[in-house]
Length: 283
Image (cartoon, rainbow, N blue to C red):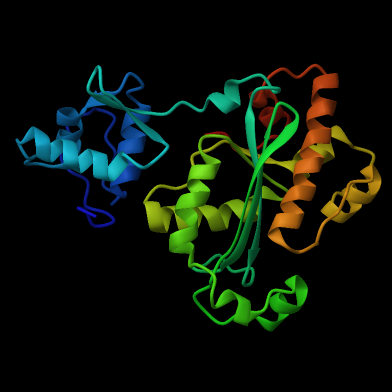
């Protein structure tokens, strides 16, 4: 990379100053471009980042294409020569057209630390159907907990040959794209994913987040328990291997399909209305 993770805030004439915090470059650019939805040129962005920006246009172009080119949160318009933040169309789209990526993680303990994810499972839901899936074991940074091994059935010997999170996360980010990140008890999964996104990509999760645990309490208020196991029994859902990311993500995806049908029956039209109903985080 051309840059270190963060630099002190550069002098800027923008009245909505980004402040003195040492934001990562991507975080600073994301916040700035959100305030300029029509986009900004590379010359304008250089003024934001550097007190003495490089004058060479090829150098400027190389800087921004290396920094932002592979990040799905940013787009470059070659016609106008401007960078902008990608809009989250999934949140505004009709429910039957919106993309939802249902995610589950297995982690090496509950502490939110780098290198703790040991498995990622995910399913994409579009148009009331599961359309694609993602699965990978992940080699953790430390020794696998014996409790986690017993719970998941994952052996440390198996993880030794698994790719590290640095190799898995780019593929997962590409799979996630700009879709609505969905999970059961989403706060748990999101905190680990966001940590690793910030560490490796220098920009946290910006996708809309939908929590099926919260949504199930709203859509099915008379159930006594809202754990995945209880909901699977209540709705006779097909269960795969429990406490494994792929199996649990598939179970949560089936649950989401039921919720989408219920939301449609209630007259909800867009993913944004679904997010509001669940009172989940918005981008």
